[in-house]
Image (cartoon, rainbow, N blue to C red):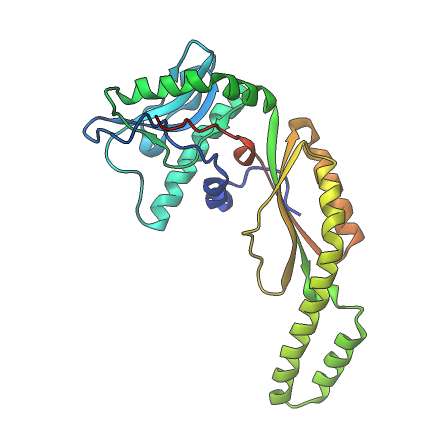
Length: 292
């Protein structure tokens, strides 16, 4: 089981997918691409010192766009199209985006992360800053409520899988196939190996179905919120039990780790990955502003 420390390189794509699915403030369909936009990293309390977040993507100067309601957006001025390119370039930009969000989160104690490539454009007779301030002011009650709810909260990602070989160790049918393989020539062994793999996976699948509700209840009891990630893929030889993001108070990280340790001790076939703590990407719930 991995320690609960930030594993940014491994988690870059996960952060992009978990980022709050906030659309840019849209006051009509007209935008002015000739005017600079505002690449937006996060929403924070306006008391956050601007220097606390450093520089952004490609060392862009980062600033705060604040409103009287006590909110601010962490942004940099951006011209041109959204960031796009080779996979390595995109991963690097996502990491830089995540670094800004994390620094804001650590400095402010709470943050509403925006997803990668949220760019507020100028248009409809207003520059990007005016459009962003208008959205912040209108959404202030919901944004403030969510920021307060997430203060000193962290996101943890937990993946629990079963090693199909270990899950089938006590199976009499699997044992018979292994014994037969040892007595047969190579050509027949290959055929039997396929049968053994299928049998082990069936056993692991059945065990995963039995364990899923139990493990989910145990993790939900330690968290304030839980969301599942159905996109998770495990390597060959493993069957997924569950992949979840947990929202927990910072001081409860160790308790989650202890529960996962107990699971691995109870179930020898269990393989547990414990990632985080992260800003609350999966729980930001940034409201969208209706067109009009």
